Image 1 (cartoon, one colour):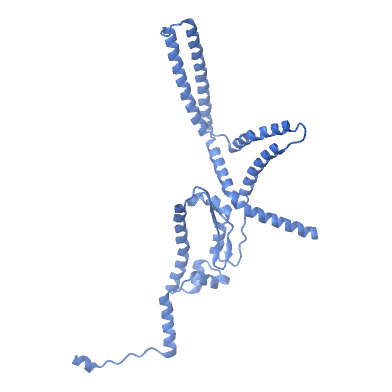
Image 2 (cartoon, rainbow, N blue to C red; image 1 turned 90 degrees about the horizontal axis):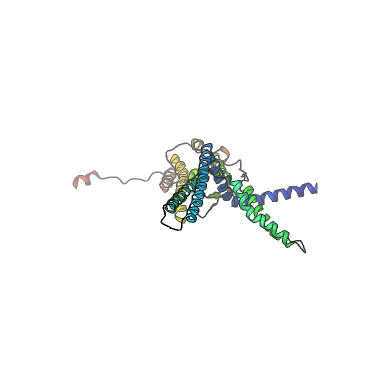
Length: 320
């Protein structure tokens, strides 16, 4: 029984640690997935056909340029006069072949941009740049004693890349209290880091990620992490939009109260469940000062009666 409890405690602690690290890696994984998806969309049969045509054209241009250079060398060997017709023709042909090769190289680069290699292949190539030399260095340095730190450093870099992707793609599920209203539950789900990152580009919030939201006495608390593309001004602009959306819910509940809508109808419109309606009304309803004064006046009238109005002397009015 003890080992089961220890295993459960270890699992919960590990999951909590991974959940706390996941939001840090979400931007990296999101950018990776976006770039991978962009590259995959570019790998169409039409772009592949254009790339193959550009490659064949460039190979032919290179061959033509090599032939022209060979003919120029032959013309130089045949005549020492630089103004000879054969040498002048060879120079013109070489310049035209070189120009054509540059043009085909430019078109080949454009075709390669339109048909990118997969991001996984590029990552393998990038990691092989340091992995292969580190393994060779470890082998050469292990003549007298085993030296593994070059290979271990390279493996650590690769492991960090893989761990960042795994943690960034980790699905966090925020536990939602059943006593919350429908609107609060929906807000908690939308503030979930996985949901936020998936829909952030549609909201104009690309590069941001939320921390798991928490319920506090003052409401729902959630932090937003930003990448380097955000500035104070852009964040302030977005904050104004979020603040306006949040205040709209408070304003709607208050207006319904001022219109005399029954409390039960307000609960249904706002999505407040019966068990939490009192707490939600206390949070979202704001009683204006004019309403408080009106209620105080009505209570005073009920207890002490309405204030007496002084009688008007009609004779005094006629004399005036």
